[in-house]
Image (cartoon, rainbow, N blue to C red; front, side, top):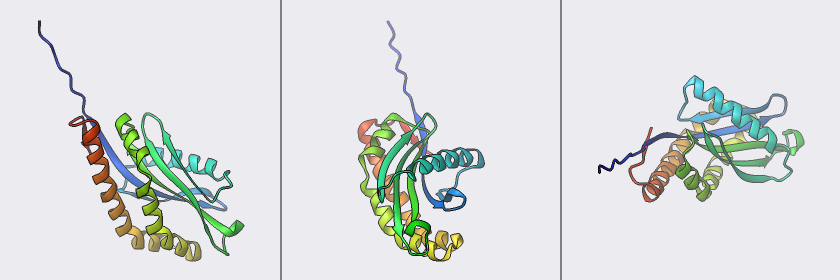
Length: 174
């Protein structure tokens, strides 16, 4: 009798996103890091803007939640920044960590670490406040690029170490 072993390998990518709830246009994606190809970018933006729109109904100043379907999992932190020039007295933002495609062990790792998401918020909040004042997206992106890179690398390192514990050799990072 011959026994066969089947080994599955999952390939995935991690991305960071920042969204802003524009008073006229509704939810808008401000930044995706690293960039996605157009096909994936359109899908991701469509999903994220819909879930941010739902979050805008919430009256809390900050809330965290997970979203997952077969193509994508996201860890999301929605929050408001008080600002006198903003409609309603505050600007609404959502920062996200994305896993493409969804992967069960990846979902477990994402949902177990909110510390990095709050660190991301702490590091980018001054740039977002400045954006509320001048609405200059290019300036926000250039000022925040190093923050995106730092958080991305921090989360990638954490993510890969946790996956190695949960399921050694069953994944490939894109």
